[in-house]
Length: 443
Image 1: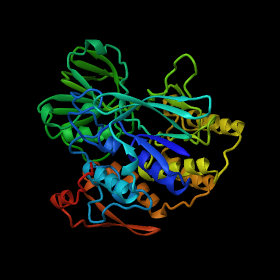
Image 2: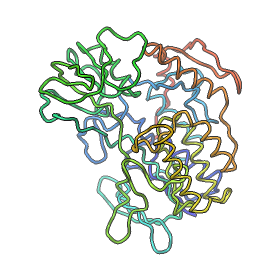
Image 3: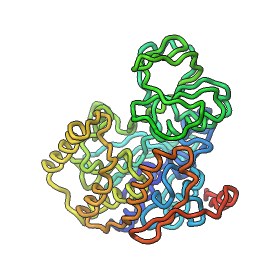
Image 4: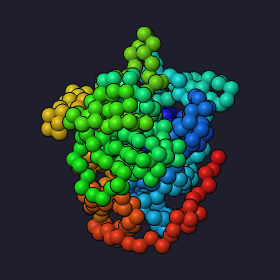
C-alpha cells in the first residue's frame, strides 16, 4: 500500500506516524510545498512558495504566544519540554514539531518544495497525484492507494463585504498579514472580530497605537483592558474615514482596519476538469460529504481530511482524527454503510444549525462537544482514549479564567500532576532560557 499525505504540518505529521503504527504502511509520501515542516507554525515575514515577495506568508506573527498551555496542547503521548513556560511561542511549537518528526522518523518521508497541482481518482481506483517540485518547476505523477488531506485552513482569508467599503479612505488588511506592531504606532485602528487573533493583535497594538477598537458581537469582556482599547459593536458601513456600527454609533477618523475574520477552506488540487467532478464539494465553507468530518462517504477507507474542525485543542484532536482514519484504512474498524454515514453527516449539520444556532459556514465547528466527539472516535475506531481528564479540567478552567484575566493569563504556568489533577506552578525558566531550549530545525 502507498499512502500520500498533503501537508507536513502537525496534522500531516501525526497522520504519517499513525499510518505506520496502526495501518502498518511503509510507503508513505508527505508532500510539502515549503522548504520545512511545521505548516502554520513556520513564521516568515518575507517568503512564499508562489510569491517570494509576499510580506507574511504565515498566519502567526512575530511575538505570538499560544493561547493554550503546552500541558493541554501536546500530542497525548509526546509532551513538550517540561522546563518551558506553559504559554510558549510559535518558535517553541515549531521546535516541538521538529522533535516529533525526529522521534517518529518522519523526515525521510517528506518531499519538500513539492506542490500538489492536481488530484484525481483514476480508473483503477488509485489516487493520481500530479506535483511540481524544486525551483525549476519539474512536474511528476505518482499513484497512491490512499490519500490524507492535511493542507490546513489558515491561508485563504475571509474578508466580509461591508457596505461602502470602497469609500473607506484608510488602509485595510487581514490579520494574516500582521507581523509586528511597530509600523502602526500612533494610528487609530479598528479590529473586526474577537477570536484568538483579534484579541491578541488588539492587545499588542494597544502598546503603540493611539486608539484600538475591538469590534465584535460577543458578550463584552468584563476584565481589565488597556485604557486605549475599547470594545464596540460590529461594522455596518463605511463612510470615508468613519465606520458606522450596527448599534448606530460611529468610529471616526480610522486609519487602519484589520479583519480578524477567519479563513476559508480551499483545495485547489481538486480540479473540475470537465471529465470527472472533484471528490469533495465546498458548500458555503462546508466540505461535503465527510463522515465524522474525516472520512469521505464515497471513499471511506482511502480519502481522509485531518484538521478541518474549528475550535478544538488542535494537536490532540488531530491525533484522534488520524488514529480514526488509520483504523478505517487498516480495517481495524469497518465503515458504516453509505446511507448511515450520510445520515450522520446531515444530522450533525442540522444539529449545528438548529440546536447550536450556528450559520452554515460553521459546519465544522466542534467547540464544547470536542471531548465527547474524541471519545466517540476512539470507541468507533477501536483505539485507546489516552486523553487525561486533567487536560479537560485545565481546558475548562482556562475557558472561564481567560475571560477575567485577558491581559495576564499567559503569565501563569501549570502542571498536570496525575490523570485527574492539575495545579498552577512557578516556571523557573525566563524568556531567554526558554529561547535557548529551541531545537534547531533539521534541513
